Image (cartoon, rainbow, N blue to C red; front, side, top):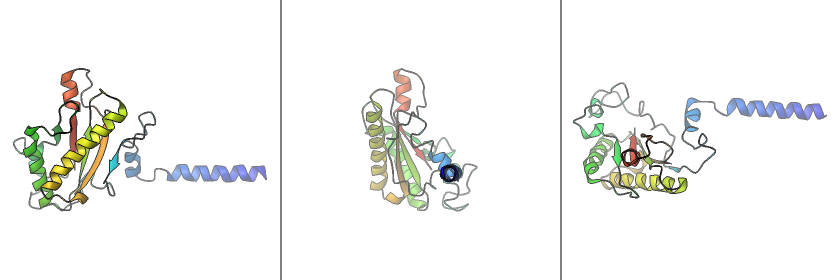
Length: 192
């Protein structure tokens, strides 16, 4: 009897282990749910739908208003440094969720693109610098993402096209401990 219970428990455990990460999407999701940062699971995620907007590759046809798609699944305008669509990072001041004025035209360009491509989705990834508590930075990153989302919605972008994620201080782009590094880490990244 004891052997049967042990055998059943082992069968259930191995079944769960084999089905736990049955697809690449589920494995990739573990990278953004906080499971790799010491068990911290308070990263805020909302409005992601099915997550298929993360890479954007198959969400729209090969051609459209914006022309042929590049290797990254986005039209060539996203690679042209003279086009505001090539800018996919919005920066903020310390302890602020107000978009810096230099980035208002960038958000407007992305709004026009999303309006012209209603099947396209974007994830707004909010980030903060290392100062402040983890909880504070998660909340600030979320507020920054919501500010950009509000600006996009005010220009007509559908809420169903937008996802919001906050990484707080967990995904710095600059590893220094000085103002120039902190400026680069206070941002929202636009991920198609």
